Length: 129
Image 1 (cartoon, helix red, strand yellow):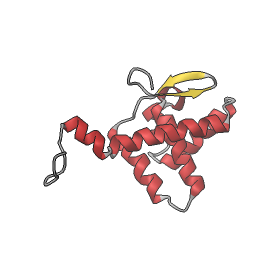
Image 2: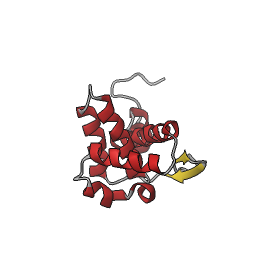
Image 3: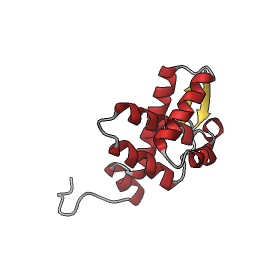
Image 4: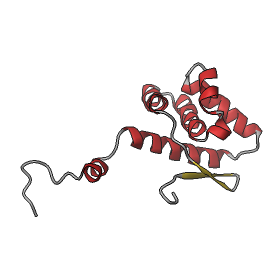
């Protein structure tokens, strides 16, 4: 992350991550959870997260819609395209996990992030220190 912007490294280049719209992020998070017990399908969803976060590389929303808004199908197509383009698997999965984490954190912020953003103090009834 540089200057508040997130990036991933592919083929030696730092690529700026752009979070997709809320519904696409929600698709990624919920479908990943629904595929519990199906690691291959979950892996494709991780690649869908990467493709949606790198719209210039992954085709963005148009490519996602062309895959019937199916993160598994879109992720598989995106992964195949990246492999054909000479990307390394290890680099792709590292970047995909990073994007998936950013997507989930944007949907389900941690308590301390919410507290800071809303300038909350401690929990009600908590004894001040």
